[in-house]
Length: 539
Image 1 (spheres, rainbow, N blue to C red):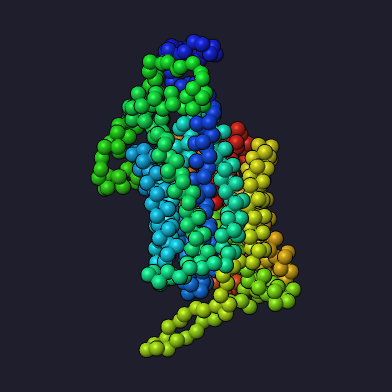
Image 2 (image 1 turned 30 degrees about the vertical axis):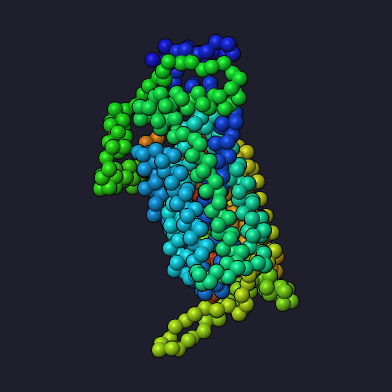
């Protein structure tokens, strides 16, 4: 079949009239405004996931009085969005493969925005917890699917460039998060809403602002079609050709010669895989869907893949335990340190600062003993240093990923993993002993940069598994990573006020352990071209 395909003509005047492969047809559309708009939307969706999951860390210190939050409840609330992502990512990934990419992305973006808006009007811990769980549940649909959707609008040689472009937009979103938080939360207005029995303060508006990218992207994607490669795999050839023509018109401004080809060449596909795809698309039984999900997942935990899956999942769990779990309390701890500095305290360890500013537990005896946490001072603003250091952290991430991408081929993955794990883990332990607040904060920043390893481990995962298991392996490993976020945030929430030092010891030792475990990744000593898969990943 390949012998019948002629080289694509370079002449601007002669349209191509023979059947072509879809990859070749996508190359004929050029790379222009259509691709750039789609890349921007995709990167904004990735940034929306970040805002929805990590933005809550800026809310917790200023919402504790309105919602009567204890430190333990802050831990639960900071992790609950990740719990929603964990519980649904497997489902969304499967539905995207069987029902369509856009079919999953657009509805889940609308639903995520709706749950975010409702959560901004909640009045107690349990209500906001349920709504933030639903936000994570729905936002997972787009985060699990957007890479496939974006890549399938591009030929193979351009898909990596497109994904890197979306990653750049995501990196900008990381940097903007503390700036958005500062511009919204540090306002002094408030509105009484008697009907809902709440005082609407800036932190509530900030939640809505974090959800706006989801709404904007959902509306924008209404103007875009389903993935052409997905449509073509389902037999919708003419719809696929129409999409290719539309991309070409956008990219050339309607000034190029008209594309003409009679058909698309069918790509080779195993008959068994094709039958399974058709069955998945037509079968509506929930039990059948669960059975198929199991058949795609089980091989990862059997035979030669069990060791690989275990190592990758443990590494991602350890990374997320610190990079997200400890990050959730980063603004809160900085706010506490700033509060003591305002009182004239110049030398104090991070943990002693936490102990000195922890909430008082008042025992109210009205027919029994009920504990209600009330802080001595209600903060309606975050200290400016919290935003400044968060901005520095996100900038380090953006620059760090670029540096790792440049050096990984020359240095190799193992030295990068061992250095980051070891250095970050050591800094985490040293935080316990440092009594200079500014130095301790910088060590805290270094501790959080262990998130660099997420992309490196993802690159290892891609090489460790065959094509038919690769996507599921990445999905499962990231599910374990997000489970680490949940566990880490709850560990900090439970231990911070009573055993603060232990939280940093757990983070530091677990990272050093991950560094040791990195030596056991199969083929980790090899350097190959696949290292260029490393890009900014959603934390």
